[in-house]
Amino acid sequence: MSDIVPPEVRPKPAVPAKPPNVGAPSPSNPFPPGIGALGGAAPLPPSGIPVPIGSHGPVVHVSSHSTGHGTGHGGSHAAAHTLAHNGGQGHGGSHGAGVGSALLGYIGIDTIIEQMRKKTMKTGFDFNIMVVGNSGLGKSTLVNTLFKSQVSRRSAGWTRDEKIPKTVEVKAVSHVLEEGGVKMKLTVIDTPGFGDQINNENCWEPISKYINEQYEKFLKEEVNITRKKRIPDTRVHCCLYFISPTGHSLRQLDVEFMKRLSHSVNIIPVIAKADTMTMEERQEFKQRVRKELEMGGIEFYPQKEFDEDMEDKSDNDKIREAMPFAVVGSDKEYQVNAKRVLGRKTAWGIVEVENPNHCEFAQLRDFLIRSHLQDLKEVTHNIHYETYRAKRLHENGGLHPISCNDTQESNL
Figure 1 (cartoon, rainbow, N blue to C red):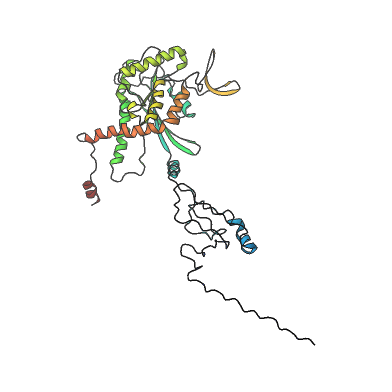
Figure 2: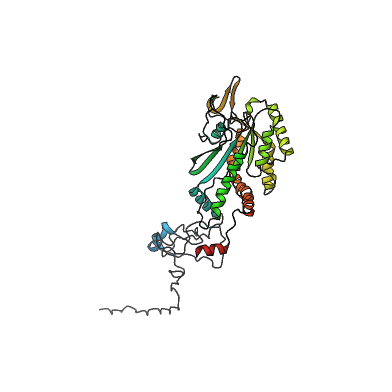
């Protein structure tokens, strides 16, 4: 019988004492240091490194199998690409275990543009355009062609039995246009009968009166103690003045009208029905009109003194050299080279409205709508309206600015 040897009893290794505050979660980080939100070991982000505004934070990559299958797979798919994309902090956990202070998107001052866009999209835009000129120059047709919609009423011609009105009857027609989610309230102010009289003395007075009435209406809304959050804007932002295609020179009526109204409204001169002249006649007529406007001291939009910087001056100089625009309007379509185009049919072919080789309608449309529509509104408010406002507030018996004492007395 052999002796049974008892197994060797090994002493248990001593467990080192746990240092104080090791592994204790902090208020800002609910997880112990070195342990990620999903239990995997994650490198700590460097402290004291500022993240500039407008940039993305540092990228923190978490290994998908760093601690074995027990903890690695639990966070492999959600944390393998944990990025400090939103303000420098990653997504802690699969859905709801993240840090409460994590930002939700890109930070940058350029987001102000997006904020302004959203706000203006909600409020919409107002644009008021006036057309002035003799009857038969195609004013209504041109406006309809500009906005590709029947925005201007075609006034019926007078018969022999009817009397021509003694004064210009100003008519305003409003429409709401929508394109790409942008809404614009367009008001077309027509002036039928302008220059149709035998005696056209002071025929511009009804037009000048209408323009000033809109300024007065806006001013009264502004000086009210409890004024509206958004004052309706009926002020005339642009006046298209149609010049007859005589090929000689401006009429005295044209010069007098633009001289009297150029300081109260943005005047844009255009040569109507430019297809009645040859290219050489058109160019000579444009140069003659520019010279007469300069000699008469008539300022048309865009005015040189309103150029804000060299870039604006360079762009506006090119526009001023091309003015007055020689335009053709039409609301009829024709087939040209297997394509439908707006045009006027003549005995020798089709005059294409949107073809720069045929007329300057495309330049006028781009200038009026694409590049300078907002500037027309700003010049109207900051220059023409402010000039009228200062004049009215300094007149004896006119409107006076409301002082603080007046406001306190009214509240009592």
